[in-house]
Image (cartoon, rainbow, N blue to C red):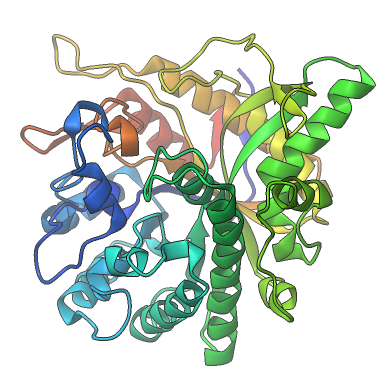
Length: 447
């Protein structure tokens, strides 16, 4: 094998999200989120499972930070629950909720781990959804208030902030496809939610700058490495359309390029115009300090004139993982090269990359998740290559620290490098944890 050395100062970490790990959904005056409501509706989540307890991280955070330290993590990305600190989405502050995140940040710093806080990872307060949620322009203002609260309370210790996690997912799966809360299937709701989510990002950046807080702020987007299914001009054009709908609609506004014309046209033809007001696009395009990239796989694209968007995913040619997407180790490096070129070489953090590998403990109790290990090795080799080609990547966060609540799949999909026994809450490091710990120690990977 060839050893691939990463630059000095490159950071290695892991990522989680509040609803997926915290539990304690009704403790210490926490308000309800849309995921609390959705998960308790029959038929919404596989096996009727919920995040009520999840990994019980709310009570076990000290042990979990010890675990992170034992693996050598240098940074940890987590999300704060909006409903835990502002039970009604705005108004009275729940000091018990704020105190939890303050304790968590202190614990991380005591162990030499840099906190990276995501302000929104899909768990909108139900009280705001009752007022229209992301379809309501006012939600962007409430988000700015929430962001200001978190900056004020944690900004003396937290220097890396992420506004939104994957607006593509919570907007489109929640408002167009219906598989996530609020469970809508509406072009109009989707168009409004896209724009209001991007406004929320812009307002949170604006508040951060106006407050003069130390550190850096950016957004994390869901990404797929789009590849033409063949070399035909039609497939190449279809791939650009896929990038418009899956990438540029959320990246373009942040970098001052607006929404793609193809996306605006698609929604307008369905009576769903974007509710853009004077000054909105300038607000969204305020300079950010980094781009967070979440990526798990690729999609091969071919034209389809019968679909309104003009393209479809071609048949997979690589093995499929339990989540249904291809095991495509080259996709991370390929996408990073593309996005770096597309947006003039921004500073990039890989805020999520990982593998669903459902390997269970063997007879001796060990967990040999070799599929995860080898795919991680391939992802990181590709990332190293993209960096050699000029991409400015500064950190990598593996998804996830531990097995957790995987949204509509419940507990049936395991992304953790640490196994969670949900009956006992035992944490058992897998082979991939040893692999990751070793590469952190060496700041590089054998490929």
